[in-house]
Amino acid sequence: MNLPATRAAFPDLGEPKLAQLSLFAEGLLEWNQHINLISRKDEAEFEVHHLLHALSIAKLVAFVPGTRILDVGTGGGLPGLPLAVLFPDCRFVLVDSIGKKIKVVQDLIDRMGLTNVQAIQQRAEQAEAPFDFVVSRAVTRLNDFLPWIQNKMSGAHRNDLENGVLYLKGGDLREELAEIDWKSSVYHLDRLFPQPFFETKQLVHLVKPAHKKAGPAFTLRPA
Image (cartoon, rainbow, N blue to C red; front, side):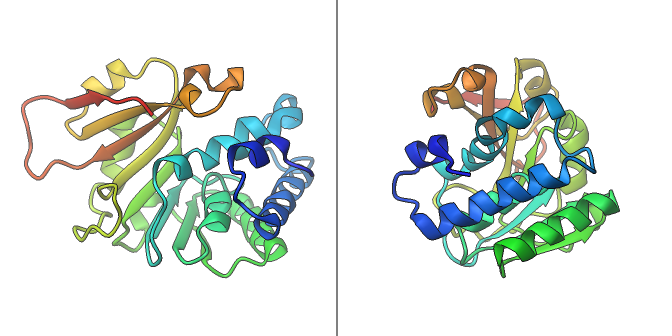
């Protein structure tokens, strides 16, 4: 798979990493014929709708070596596996409660030759902390998701971005953000990528408050 959109968005990525991402895309689409990982109707748009979407996190933060990232509800390895390609000196733990999906992820890890990823069948609450970041692609509503991982973040910050959650989600998020008391910054992905798919897509950075507050801390920041 040539990955033209990924090449355009990340011109300095290099052929070895692009080859790994191509193996990931081809492997996931192959598995999708047997296990429902993404919509069959979406297969033709896999690069933009799934791979590039996952890689948008790398536009916000370049994880420094040693960063630990937990991918919750990884499904077929998104967003964790593409990010693990871009950041080989970071440690990724990918969890999903469905065993057959973790089987797929482990096969993809093997095909790609990744040595910085661990795939585990478990719930997010069972993941062994601490992590610098938790990443996820819209597995549930934020006020349901955050209790699962609220005690998973390290208090020692090593990246330019404060430790917390990086959550990919679409649509109007104002109601969801009003339900939580975590500090939040919203990055609109259509400012990063020209494809129409990203017009309603956002990346939300969430930081747990040091103390409980009366209301939400919500700031809207451009990408």
